[in-house]
Image (tube, rainbow, N blue to C red; front, side):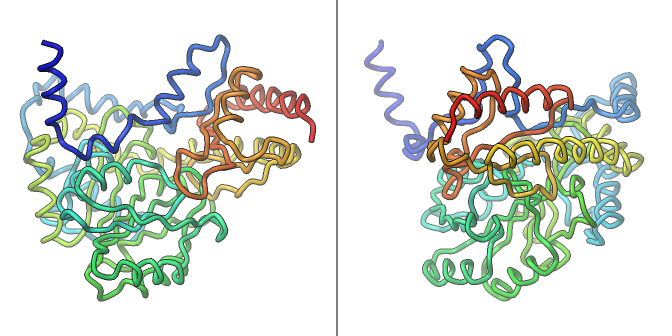
Length: 395
């Protein structure tokens, strides 16, 4: 029996052999066993879903609204999402043809890359970046092409983008953007995006713009790539970060109608449709919760403004976050460059958990990601513990 099982495993998809489970989830699980540890690790709001959103879902359940919806999503939800994007970012999408609701942005990434990639295609991925895009590219037979942005303020420059396209001219299918960026908190200005658009405009290259942290932009208004290069851009967004709805699993894909329609085929055969009562909740969030993010945003700013100076005083080099809820901190010189060694030591000696920067691709080694999606009290206690830890390891 055991030999037969091993033989069957050997016949599974070959690209699975190149993948491994998420380092972030594995590390988070391991350090969770440490008593009294403060976890500044996973990336989700520490706030609760707004009450009016929860009541909308409860109402849907009580009204037995528990059947399949259209695969693209409830018409009312698509209209509310379209209005939200127009009001917030000035981007306009026809809700009947240019919007596809998904089970979170993760499914949106998977469906989009699955619809786009043929074996041998290349996807340009600026790093450090949330690693999700890499295994999905590989599962679809694509080749990740990394551009290390660490020396450029964690912003993809047009020069490096043009060089990467030239080096893979026959295979580049798409470019991934994620901003405000996980793990750095850095975001892109209109000028940054226009320079990128100038490089790819008119080429047979998609821009996949993951803007899930758009509402957590701290200074000024988020600028969507969909408003700058609409004919080539697929925008991914949702309610997970803006309305503290990570577990509801509602995201969206917005872009050219013909492209969204093709992606919708993949979505249809993956999950049929997103959960009905969660769609009702998301409709309420988009329609009547346009200001729900503001109290959370202000709390994140307060936490950031407490944490960053403490880290800088200890010798960490920090890219000051413009959005999201992460600090990406370069280790003080006495700790060398192994982010894994530092994170393990900090967890076991100081009982504070952070994510090793190496998990975010080229440019991430020597850094750690610290999430401030935690109470200010926890952040202050974690900062005190980190201070003692650094003092115990002098330069």
